[in-house]
Length: 161
Image (cartoon, rainbow, N blue to C red; front, side, top):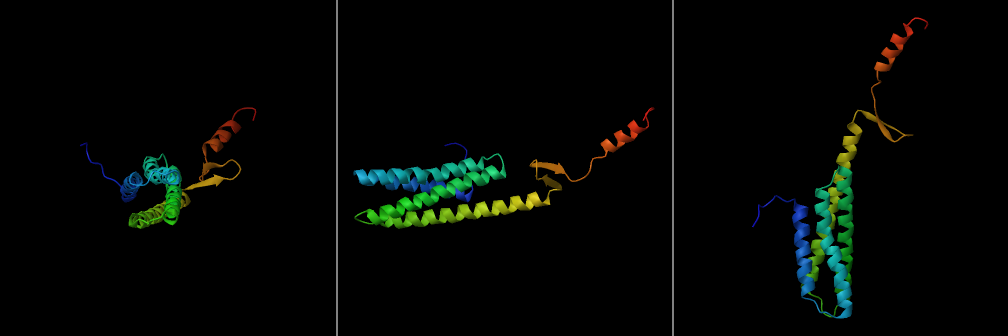
């Protein structure tokens, strides 16, 4: 086996959830309705971890937040499919309760990470010694530049000024 890399808690939890979803689906009946419901569950349940992985490789804090927000949406969707399966199956499996609880924990964890990261990002942006030009949407140094005033002084000393 390859070198073990350290993983975040949410990365590990979302991967284990995907493995549990795959195992659950493999044990289900293959009738038409179940196939449709479990296919939806498979897509959303495995997408959570994939989006967490993308977030961890994000190019910026905003990219990280965006990818985690998608993971949280997928987790909520997986919870929907799990609840629908629980309510429409003839026999409720105890495994569904466990999957629903795990899914709920993932949603809470992802939302908490998103909120914390947003707060840190806002705090960092507010502490920057730069201001935002509202018309251009461009960050501008808050200190005035002095090289232009030197240039004007030099030009005014030219003959004929």
